[in-house]
Image (cartoon, rainbow, N blue to C red; front, side, top):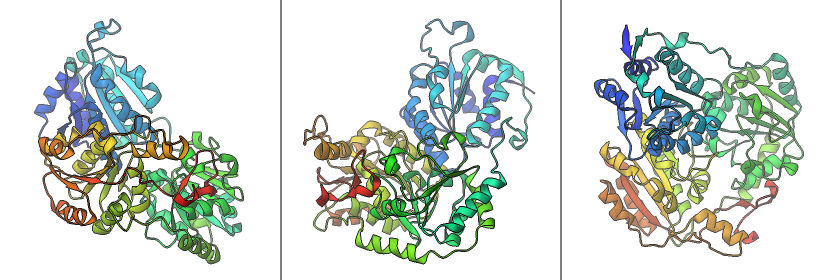
Length: 560
């Protein structure tokens, strides 16, 4: 059948199972938005307050559901406003498709009003991108975009369509996406690599498993649990790996790295075999690479060959999907008993606990531990970036995959509220909570209007210390307490601001006030609620590894 380019976009979205898009209209994308109006019974459009909010919402939708998230924007500033969200998704391997429109083909390259080479701008931060200047290429391009976004190591794909293409007509024939194959196949681990790693595991006396976001992406949590239990190995994680292995499991030792637990850092430093699955060995988890896992043989399992030996040199590696690889290793390894090593780490954890909440006043650890208890770890928790993000990783117990949504690689302040909107739309029956510092909340708090307009009962917790807390912590410890441009005590009234945007809001200054307010907020069904929680500006995240130091030197407050 013959359709316009805008109709083809709609039909291709339906073909891919898309039920929700996030975006903001404008001149060049008007034809597509006009068609969205006609398809509103099949595809829900969530109008955000800013295009960056749309890209973060698509990201949060994708991370929490496992589906491809979709966002849309017009040309020029509309398209460039998506860039931070696209880069965030790229760094954390999140499958989103960003659809933008551009000026007509005859006007390209002439500095036309709101013209931008968005394909050129986003080339370094997308898995692939396209500009469609001929309607005959539109259908195949959109199909490729979705296939690329979700295959192998996922990531964002941008499709830029000129306005004349959205108005032109062409033949369209629906297909089953399952029949649409990419030329490049997902790498499958070879038998020799599996055998080698199985042999190394059999010889290990002190194995340690380190898991990252790749486990969540591949849906390999069950295989991971069975594997860890079979070889009787302790398990630590990166921030992106949270929930992949239950925080309540007896083999779990906590997060690794700069703000990881002392026990996880001790385990990696003293193990004789480190099995890293779905990680990229970020500087935040390795510390001084010359002193990283000094006693261990290192095995790296990852779907992306580019990650192998990029940051850490390995003794063996397996290239393949984590679910497939762990499943095959399960068949190869023998049941083992490392109870003495497990007991050593448990004793270490007892002697080196995560610092407890302040007994005398409200602080963020108390907020997170209370949330964890009251939600039984079953909420979807989003964070912005900073101290509150690290406290969340340390003090909230994640038990299920895809329940922590946070900008790990790019460290995007302003990510969390947009992501929470996407997560709540994608998971309407789950409670969604966004944890923000007041510095991050200022960046994209306009998305409260989006949540209120769409009757989304998101709980927005503002950890309010009136400073840029994480930067201030570094200024205190390493910059002689020179607090250059990190004090935010300007009298902003977040209660009035939130209420003015259609949300409910409460000022919280004590533990008792927080307990009562969170109980009420968890019962809310159709309105976002902001809890502005006042804490001390000099509260710090402990433990901490100083930049450049080995992770074995993670210290508490009394050590500095």
